[in-house]
Amino acid sequence: MSTDDVRPTTDQPTPPQTAAPEPAPSAPTITTPPHRGTPAIVTVEGHDETFARAFARGFHETFRPEEFALESKLVEGGRMFGHQVDGRWVSTCGDFARTMTTPGGQVDVAAVTVVTVAPGYRRRGLLRELMHHQLTQVRATGTQPLALLWASESLIYGRFGYGRTTAKLRLSGPTRATAFLPEVAPSGGSVDEVGREQFAAAAYPLREAWLPDRPGHLNRTEAWWDFYLFDAEHRRNGAEELRYALHFAEDGTVDGWATFRTKYGDTVVPDGGDVIVTGIDAADPRVYAALWRWLLDLDLMRGFRFGHAATDEPLRQLVADQRAIKTELQDATYARIVDVPAALGARRYTSAVGMTVELTDTFLPDLAGRYRLELGPDGAEVTRTDAAADLTLDVRHLGAIYLGGTALTDLHRAGLVGEHSPGAVLALSAAFASPRAPFCPDFF
Ligand SMILES: CC(=O)SCCNC(=O)CCNC(=O)[C@H](O)C(C)(C)COP(=O)(O)OP(=O)(O)OC[C@H]1O[C@@H](n2cnc3c(N)ncnc32)[C@H](O)[C@@H]1OP(=O)(O)O
Image (cartoon, rainbow, N blue to C red; front, side, top):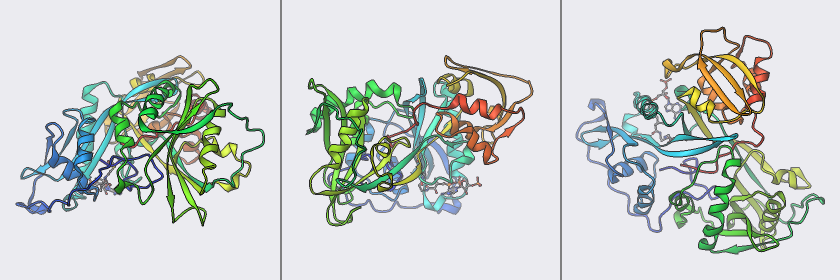
């Protein structure tokens, strides 16, 4: 199961790992050559090792029993499937049931994962079949109005109705040389490093408590925490072990957390080490600043990297010299809406607006048509209508604007949205805006 843009790097949340990789299994024995094979879709029984070996191979990774054991705790029956030829998996696909925070609410999502097609079978329509099978299944269950994924390549999923719904920043720069603005107030507490157990006891409930205020975030069960904090050597890219820090308020209670590694050699700033931040959160801005200052002031470190920052990451506002921080914008999660009324009803809107939208959808054509939207701070009412449309929008663009991470006005300026009533784009764009940039720190 791929967890970090497919390519493991040390500046992203920790993917599942193993202490001692097994020798690579020998290549499967082929009975029918690919040009003569007729792949058929089969649902996986339980969490099958042959299936796990197939998707590891599809991502050009080594199968590792420890990862398999971790994943077994996450996989739900009936959600993994793929094509088989002669009983061998030649494609893999699946999803996890997770809950995503929306602006003002939450929505159950099918978190799509392990999409692979064996090299001998690629470019003959197997992915298209997998996507169709999966979205049909998700619709049939009726409880998940959208599917969500991290794309290994950004070109793949638009054709299936997915739109980029969150983005992320890759930040790097000097550590001690990066001063904060003089007006940044001290937190009144202190930061200290702790062991994993103490971290878990304090940070897990904090994350849970802050979740309603984190659009784009996914719920994390303990099994998901285990998955993200799994820390084996082969995934560290030469960096040191994962470490944990907590912020303690004046009265001693924990009110912020961070996870990080360090690395010498091949650093952002020559002649020192790098702090590789893999996660940081706090509700109080002064606590957030204190955690960053602690990370940036670690002795012997000269540079930092944070490969997985929200687009509104406060560090960029805290520093005196904004040019000191190198910033790269990257695409993150993609959303595919499969139930328009339920998806739009699962969030709240910045302003009240009523209009008719013509939705286009070539992959699931029965979803296309006109919808009357009544949106506002209390939620949404969405119904089918024959009334004239105020604007025309493709389903992938509805996925893109869903969390407020992409502005409808931007899509309109790019010529991707048809406006039939003057002002409709501006009104809908304002309603979908999110007070906090949506962000997903969880690979899956
Ligand atoms: C959520 C995740 O798990 S993301 C992980 C995706 N998987 C990987 O990157 C692993 C390595 N790659 C693969 O296994 C395969 O190449 C896949 C799964 C990406 C594609 O599988 P295929 O069976 O070859 O795709 P299929 O033949 O159904 O192609 C469907 C369409 O997607 C296009 N497409 C497929 N792969 C790519 C790609 N990598 N880049 C751009 N377009 C692509 C095809 O050209 C085709 O286009 P069309 O609709 O215009 O005809």
